[in-house]
Amino acid sequence: MRLGVYVGSFDPVHKGHIGVAKYLLDNNIIDKILLIPTESYWDKNDLVDIEHRYRMLKIYENEKIIVSMKYSNFRSTYQILDELTTDFDDDLYLIIGADNIIKFHLWANVEEILKHKVVVLGRNGIDMEEHIKKFEKDDSFVLLKDFPQMDISSTKIREKIKNSDFEDIEQYLDKEVIQYVMNNKLYC
Image (cartoon, rainbow, N blue to C red; front, side):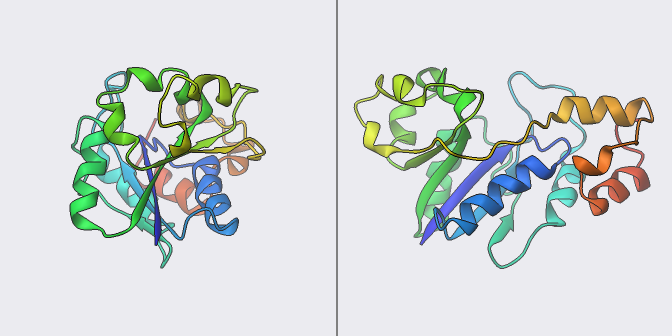
C-alpha cells in the first residue's frame, strides 16, 4: 500500500491542507494518508498547542485519513520516515509543496528521505524539474505539475480571527474547524 506522509504545523488546518489529502487520494496517487502535526518547527515558535492542532485534524479522520501525534516530536523529516518504516510495511510517500523543493537539498539526511518517494505538489510556477536535477535519485520524485493549488495562508487566517474578521472565513476553514477555534478561543 502507498502511504502518504503529510507533516506540517496545521495551524490551523484549512481547506488547502485537506484539499491536498483529498486530491492525492481521489487521483489514486496514494492509498492512505497520515497527517502529522509538528511539535515545533525550526522557524516557527509561536504555534498553538499541538493538542488543539491534533484535535482539529481529527475532524477529518476516516478510513483513508489517519491523524497521529506519535511522530510529532521528531526534529527532522528523515527521523519521522525512519520511525514509520518500523511501524508500517507500506511504501512511504512524503508530501511536500514545490516551495520546499527549492531548499530540499539542505534538509537533514536527504539521502535517507530519498529512499522513499517524494510527492511534490506544483506551486507558484516553480520549475520543479530544475530543482530535482540536484539529486542522483531524481526517480524518487513524483511531480504533480497540474495540482490545483488553493491560495490559502494559515498566517492570514490567524490574522483574520485575531481581528474578528469572519466575513469570508468559511472559504478557508470548514465549519467544524471554525467552531473548534471559536469554542477554544484560539488565535484571539
